[in-house]
Image (cartoon, rainbow, N blue to C red; front, side):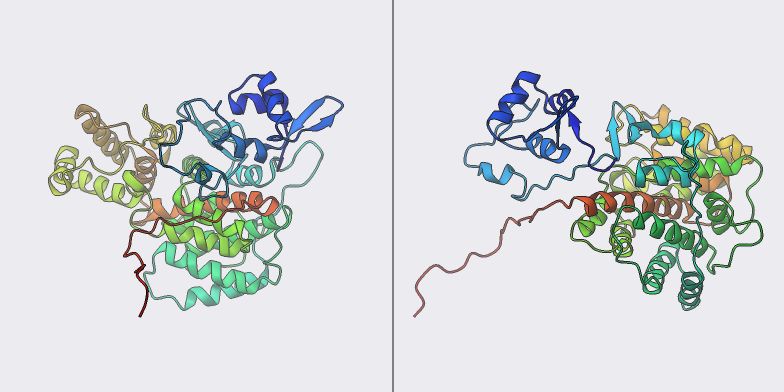
Length: 429
């Protein structure tokens, strides 16, 4: 499904024009169709670039450049890169992976299956009889990651363990520069297996009967134990919902690295940079902030905990509001609706009370950070587990974006607007 070509109707719809206008673009040399027995098809990248171009006045709602603005800078390649993707769509308050509703997928598919869907556009164990690929590390990766983790100080944070794991796994992989659409998923399965093991601090070879599902490994890494009946499905849903979210800051960093043909491990390291920053979740805050709020609410009550946050910051606490979902983040709503499956009704009631306090005070609806923080809190996970789950799942999305970039790199050279001291234009003596 990589670089799928568009039909005439699809191209016209994406450009917001009539079919007759589409062919006027062809006659002007702005589009270059290919003829097929069933009709003309169009390159999706070329259509996307035209949709962003100043040469396309038909784009709905596109303003004309202000007076004095160089129109060439609005052209693709002139400082405004267009990353064309088939992966993720946020539309109408919903999140879609390759056209499939992500919330629905979180109810019916495991994380491994959704990762394969993002990477390849196919489901494992498809009707053609192909076997589901194995998600495990090779002996060399296992040994290298074990040595690297053994050098970390006690109490190293999950994202620090992730960074050490990616570097060690890369150095152990002689084929890390394989960038083809089949090779990258092989790397991805091994790397995500290593990252899941790294949450425990020391990877071990899988026991008899083959490796457990990724969600079970992540649960063990975040709690040190085994998930109670029914709880593992909630974690699996969280991993699915966190896998991709269009061009979030960490994904943009990963995709830029891939556009210059960085290997998959370097792509993941690029994504981990923004993911480790204190502003990674933007205006919504990180799940770890939500975990702290919920712990306070359990100790002193929801009203006092929320009130203390308002007093200290003067702002709505983390966990409420998401600009892309003004009517409510469907990912957060899904996790909050499943809290009872985690087996601790008392903690679930604390979460609900915090949500009720926010609603009574007119806060925006709960977002995904609140859902992840609630999952970590209700499951009794280690502090920071919500952020670890979020970042772990994002690796699948980063690699999916890398596969797209390897197939057809985005060519751009961003420019800076210089505001410093201007050079002295007077003649030198």
